[in-house]
Length: 156
Ligand SMILES: [Zn+2]
Ligand SMILES: [Zn+2]
Image (tube, rainbow, N blue to C red):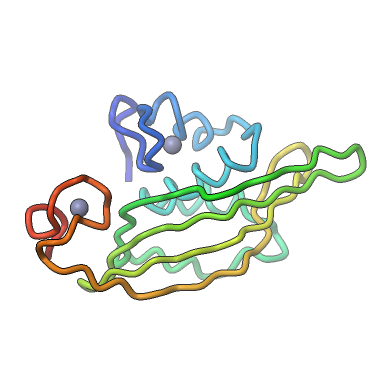
């Protein structure tokens, strides 16, 4: 899926795609684990399988990515992050929450992801994830964080 560089970036940074995740998707190395993580979230939204593979540790990258299009990513919140730029080894982690809709059901993935810098590029290794179901009412604020009621926003 291609996105205009003037569109709002899917990672929710508030910047345009061209000023946020697009350069990374085009091959620029991420400077921080957070920007890599955000670009991977955007890549899930845009179903950029090649980018997801490139930014995934070869030992843990799954053979089947499962980007069926059934999962609609709605919101990303980065809760905490840290990185260590040691001389021998560079590691980082990001704790985030991602809200998505699948077959009309709302769910939230909360994950502490581990990253490592491999040949100068950050890659995703693995994470401790937990998925919980959300049950927003039609008059509740939309879980996508638009500020509108669900029935006027992402209701299906
Ligand atoms: Zn972005
Ligand atoms: Zn919404």
